[in-house]
Image (cartoon, rainbow, N blue to C red; front, side, top):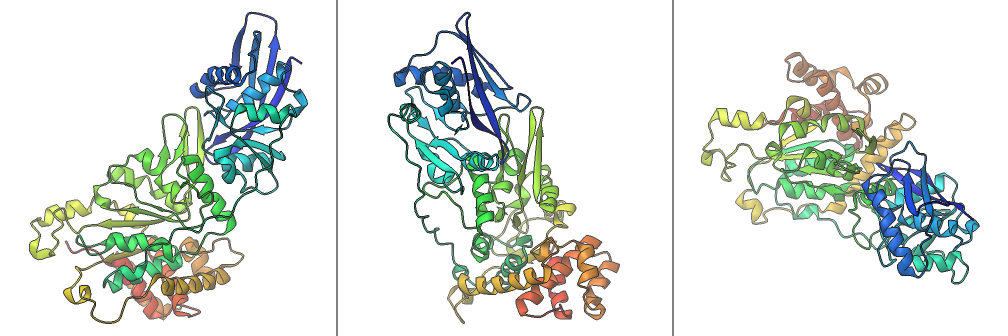
Length: 506
């Protein structure tokens, strides 16, 4: 047999496409020709595959070898094609039966000694193979638990190329991998740890109930970071479909925690303010990788010291936050990632960040305004909740009064509010108040005009844009859901308006 074919999977973002791997052997000067838009890593795989085959005990055919990766118009990236190339070469040389690899999907990187190493993106690759109708997938042992999350596919875990050769030749069979029990998720930080800050706790609860973006300002030590870190614990556990989406993104990014093949908790991403645009949104010079915004899909993206981020970097978040996805285009292709995350910004009131408040501030009014203007108006217009946190008082620190509510109590109210919103929005597409289009909100669920008096006055005075008014209405519905009301009243609109117009004094 001089022609053999098998299958692998190429990734573009979190979307996979099945790639046909064909190997033809002919008379001529010994050598290897690799076609089908391979990148540098795929071209180098020929040398890895040759060394792995020889060190496994098989012989490398001394013939002219042509390897085709189809579809030829699709760029091929990464080392995940190694195992498929080795199997196809051995089948074309007659070492393996050609029919043993026909229809088989193989993923994995080969070491020079024949070991099969784990690769990024195993979950979306196996999902793509299942959608294409393939029933058996061979993956590295390090990716077996992740790949076994896909139903209807037999997952064979190979530790070495020799294991695969023994299986395909019928000497030693690889058993289908059975997924073990998922480990319990690590406990989330508890909201009861936050001292005082009733306004901040209320804002975090409202943000969790409606999926709203949040901006926290206040001096160092006021609790901005603590509140942001406890927001994911208030969000519901991800359902199966959402968990697979989030896990696929982290699989492509290579950030899956060890021993946790499925992410069932909303993720929390907190990049440093020196992060580049590619690190925040996604990109890269080679394979396009998801950024922090995409890794926070269905979770929380927290930007501490937000004014210290470059303004152009922050402004790249505007369109992805609106659309819930980001498309990154390069000369060699493009990749689309989902990124429906909640944005939480935190900032000090001024550059000196005097912990004692305004009395200790050494900044001039011009310096304060310049510092606050680093966050652009269009970005801030997309933030529903803006809360100023005062310094924590001694009485609150000493524990005066009742103990603060724990995460479990607040999460129960959040779940009830989300259930009420989902029942009202059933059949319209969005499931959260923050996602409802403004026109649909005004036409299908109008708020009584007397309740809107304050919001309309703010619009007339230029304190609100039309988009801002729609966001006030969305927050009003969230407040009504938390209170168990079927329609917002004047108090809900007033509270929503106060949360939006609250700013740090210049």
